[in-house]
Length: 290
Length: 235
Image (cartoon, rainbow over all chains, first blue to last red; front, side):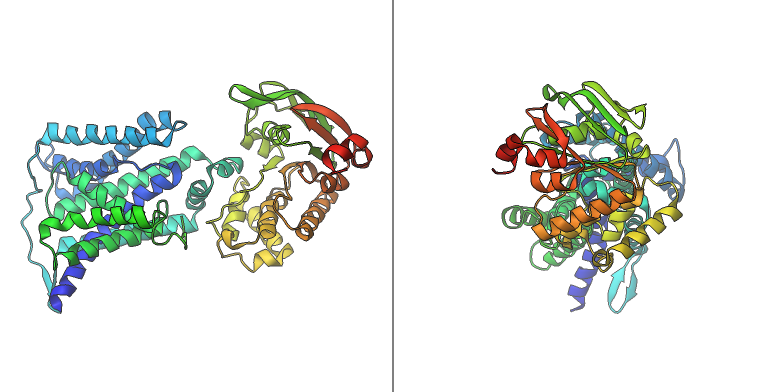
């Protein structure tokens, strides 16, 4: 029994990070109506920028490296929009999708160029997990859950209690009407890209802290976030959050039945089934807060 | 004249819909535009409101030339546009819809008071203020959309098909509200598919055809006009 409880706990830890990725991805979809395939690269760049700063010539202590790394990640996110997506915004949505695949290749291979393709770590000694009721959790994992709760809680506050957040949801609902009502589109799109990059970069750093870094980490996690977005219904923020948690738990509990090597199979299978059976997500009927 | 539209030419990209359309509206007047599908009725509202930029001609509002001003600038000057159909945010709550509708008001205390008075005026909306607006009925949605006029208190409101898809009894209610707001000093330029209803509540009307002026007159004159009766009022 404890074995399964531990798997569920591991699932919640992974799922809280997937939720961070998925929420950003679905917000971009909600406002701009395309899936940003370069979202994964924001995850990887968040992690690699911290690696850059803690090593020579910078040699900044880890806790001081996080903030500047996240700021640069946000600049990459806003830059994607400004220099690639905005010039194409009036075109076909497929054009944006393809452009984002291009941006994804560019950013991923820049990582390969600078750091190579090998696994890397922050070189922090692993800490023994804290034991309680037969379950084990490391301080890093507690930080992962804590950060996800903090970011998603702040997002909830922003979206439901501030006029900027309400404007963002209004734009996601009906962009034309939002423009008629005088909502500042530039401010809203900047907010969306800043939030999406911040959540991706922070999640990427936490994942790397818990495991390791490799150039494909963005792509792998982007696919999981994509599955979570579909599960929650594209554009539905709270659906994506629940979807992320669900995928984290499904993957980790799946380890009890499949070899861990097939972990990623679960999100792909989910994407496949959802696209065939429930393209509007499992909350399609409820529609949820966008 | 509160609004003077002179020789307005407008359209979408390479397609010109309106060809030198002219019309006027006095202060405190309700003016209705009627005409068959594709006559360019909605395009007049889009061009006057600033949602699309006119190619030629001029729009003068309260003595000031505003032809090429954008939506927000015109809204600030007291000219607002309520589009047809999807004119509320379905996933925002009723209260949030009202907040967004009034978000251009700089004075948040004034906005809060305006929202409170709208909610007081319409108990059926008050009851659902914290529910998503998608749960409202068609008539309630239209009332919610029209509440923007009460919140912003403009000089002129452009309404595109306020009766679209509503039951006859609800249409009467909507036009009653428009009449009440007009008595308080707000002018209306409206487009109506339901020509009989539109003309009967309007002081004057314009008939458009293929993007050109066809006829004009008081609401009653147009209702009695044989061509109008034959073409738009079903005999």
